[in-house]
Length: 213
Image 1 (cartoon, helix red, strand yellow):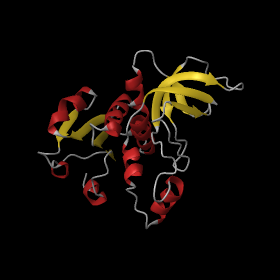
Image 2 (cartoon, rainbow, N blue to C red):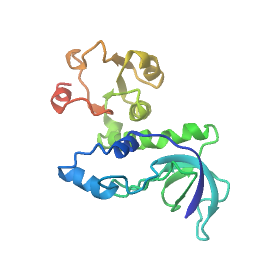
Image 3 (cartoon, rainbow, N blue to C red):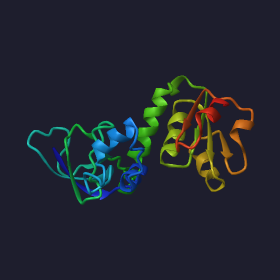
Image 4 (cartoon, one colour):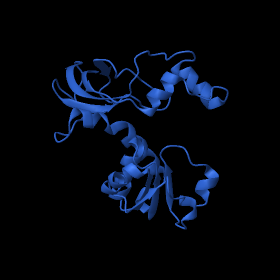
């Protein structure tokens, strides 16, 4: 295992859900999440899923990292292997966890902001076979998942349209969106555009509504 001294973390949507226990407990998914996370309070009182920091020490069998290495990553291996605790000063993780060397051209704060939105965006874009998608719509393009999705979809060659509020239009455009749509002024279901793939990064569009696109 690797003992990591944490320099930066982030408060994610998942942290807020767990802290507020905003789970649909009376269905199978909610029941399973309750078993994993705890029913009347978090099983682990120290929350936090993502981090950036430095290797403080390593176990004798660790080969991938050494003392002093700058790292970033997150603690989940799957939806049922949730390992909180990055709000603490130190976190111990197996060396085969979702961790990597921090690039030298970004700060610890910037690195800590990458894993949550970046990995979730990559997961769902991969399910949509983004490499072969032509026109892609990212709803919630200015959030943690959305900003990563815009950049990843653009990287894979898609023509990206991003939906966000007025204040974030320039940000989303700068991230690679060919078209930006202000949801406070325009109804995307009525603009006549069609898309090969739609990613709802904030979970606010109904299936019926998105089917119109």
